[in-house]
Length: 230
Figure 1 (cartoon, rainbow, N blue to C red):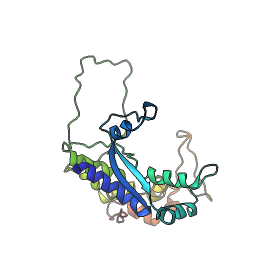
Figure 2: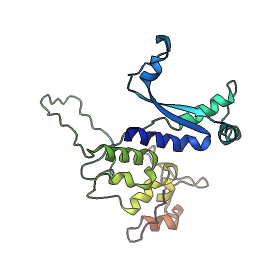
Figure 3: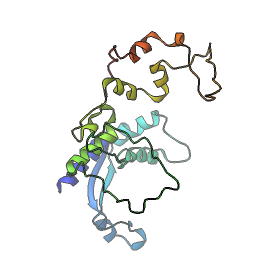
């Protein structure tokens, strides 16, 4: 078995086998050779596929917990729903990620500035630098970004010249809905802030409403709290 096939098989087995399934690799061509054209899979012959079987243990290890998890929907077979639920857990929902040649993953794309009426027909097109050239490093990067992004390690795919400070990491680790409160800018319900006419969509809290912990956190002379772990 090819190394990459064995690696994929192991990952799928680690996800499915504890729930009473078995996994066997095959090529799509093997399947299509045994069936008439009407049932062929519309994929190239060498395409890798995995056959998933349920064993007697599936009933106790997968179906019963599934029925207790409230994922069950009406009008379809419970076993089919359970199997589909577990197969979705091994599908390759891999999102891409950008890496900066100097900052690694410690950056973000914030916007695009458009200049209507300005044309540059001779602007040279530059190919983005290949910051992560090896296949193994790319796999590690994509797995880190998609499945372990909270631990920040994928951002070091390229040795960065500069990383986020602990204060910045704390801010970005905080759910967006809680960031105003972290900054001490959350508006209280009892005493709404005035709306300034020059900024019709902006409201500010009074200074007395800002918690002392938030004021100290924003002070450059005070160390920020330790960012939460992965």
